[in-house]
Image (cartoon, rainbow, N blue to C red; front, side):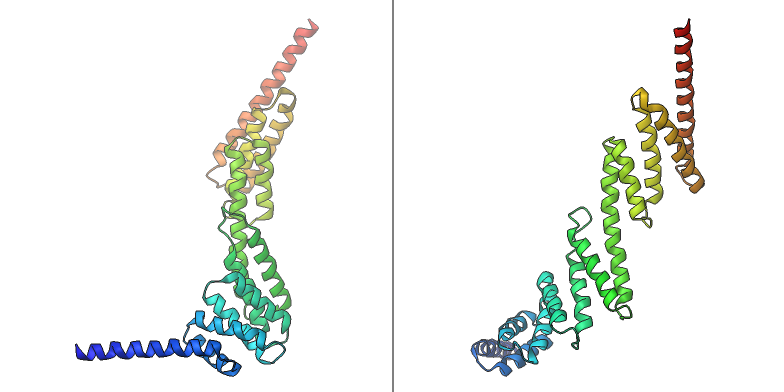
Amino acid sequence: MKATLTILIALVVLLTGSCSNYQKTLKNPDLNKKYELAQYYYNKKDYYRAVTLFEQLQDNFNGTAMAEKVLYYSAYCNYALKNFPLAGFQFKAYFENYPTGQWAEESLYMTSYCMYLESQPAYLDQTDTHKAIESINMFVTVYPDSKYVAECNTLLDKLRNKLSQKAYKEARLYYDIEEYKSAIVALQNVVRDYPEIAQKEELDYLSVKSHYLLAQNSIEEKKTERYQTAIQVAMIFCEENPDSKFVQEVKGFVSKSENALKNMEADRKEKLTFKNE
């Protein structure tokens, strides 16, 4: 018990002394002392105290060689504290102010990575996702041989997948609410913009079915053309996806469309015969 109490007292004294030293340094006009303590806290991963000191130093070190280090470490403090917008802003500021600096390449990459981390889930607004893609592409253009390029490609794949899933859900919604004309356009746009999407076969199938249902629900004047289009897209699907689980149903759309056209033609001939009589 006595040994435990001694350890606790020592810890309290140590922490109190540390806090006291920190508070004194905050008020100390000696910039070198502040920088030394900021580095100490940074190395100890006490990023909140470190960034507070680094932020104090930024204005004081403007125009000096020390400013580069202060900005770099301050950015990483905010990154560690998950303040990604500010960290990204500081990494970008580092690159813009020190384009040939020691950490220029790393900072430009971290600018993009912070933007990647700000990208929202697929069901939310994707403005940040588009910005992250643009930023990563810029990094690869500036540093095509960088060690970060492989990671950039991985991030781009994840961001594009997020965009493709949002586009898929939006296109699927048109189909679900039976807006078949809009669904056809949206479904085809998803396949065109994201040919690598996992649901490509499903999207093609829904496009075929939307064509058929659009024709089925059209006014008489538009049915012939739309059934013919439905047959064309269905046959293309069967050629491109012979082993698809949807292929039998799609063939059914072809048969139904052909029968509908035959019946329409028969009705037309019957009406002409009746009229001529």
